[in-house]
Image (cartoon, rainbow, N blue to C red; front, side, top):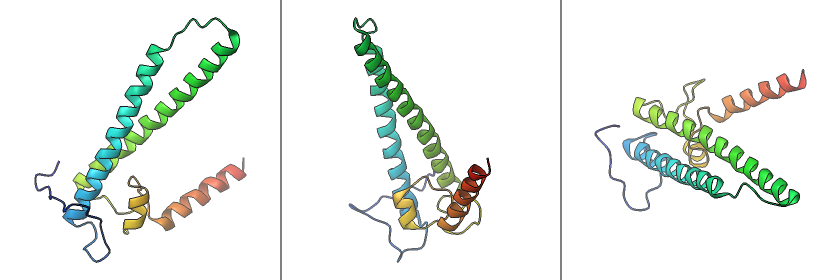
Length: 142
């Protein structure tokens, strides 16, 4: 972590009037990412705890099927959280490396509004749209 962390004013929100990815903006997104990561980790812990407390030998077949479906859904959710946490960690690393907020493909600014909506974004909107179009074309050709 950077030793020159900035203290943010209460209720701070990045604005276009500031220099893009100023120390304040970087600290804002760092806190946003860390907070999101902590929420996901806590929810994952709760999921694991729920699964462990689950009574395995439920008598009735319908109840057992319902429980298995619920457990499967919880495990898929947990896997999605694990992948999100990995992306958050990569975003935090990009912050430390000074690459956060810039498109991996073009080097252009990703933009405050996009980062506010999706703080783990690695592509600017144009690059993201190109990527999605390529994905769709690959899917259509199969």
